[in-house]
Image (tube, rainbow, N blue to C red; front, side, top):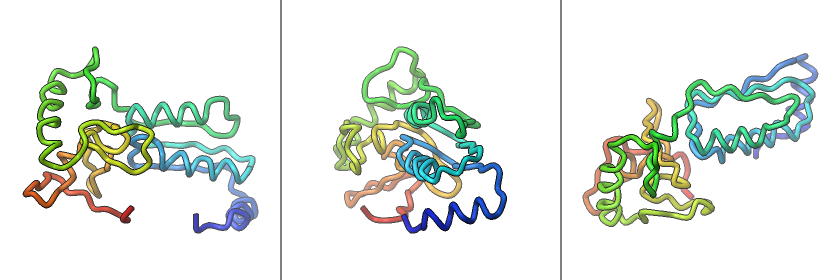
Length: 174
């Protein structure tokens, strides 16, 4: 949002750059990275672009795959796709890991204590419920921070004595 599209395009073309690699450490729901991909696509560079998320959740995988389907210049090669069976969901899933049922019950019990909704609308722009942003349901902690797509029990504190195992460092306030 702070970049000048024409200057970026000119720099890439003047520098003779033939390929571009977009590396992302973690993709949850795919919202942030899809904005980046739309921006790069709008530059109309005419060069090959590869998108490489190191770790990606099923929601993000579905979003990026759908976005790039049929693209001639952009390709997608995730390093690690988290399987759906390892994602925490509001409703039970047939192929889910057995411990997920137990954690879902704990998550429901503590959602009230944390002052968070157990289930939020996936279409909500900002609201984070107990299953994380857009109900992504990840159980991921990165060395640099804890994604908001992770269960809130893991990263979010409140004023009523709830201290998470891996507090999230918010980059900006919404």
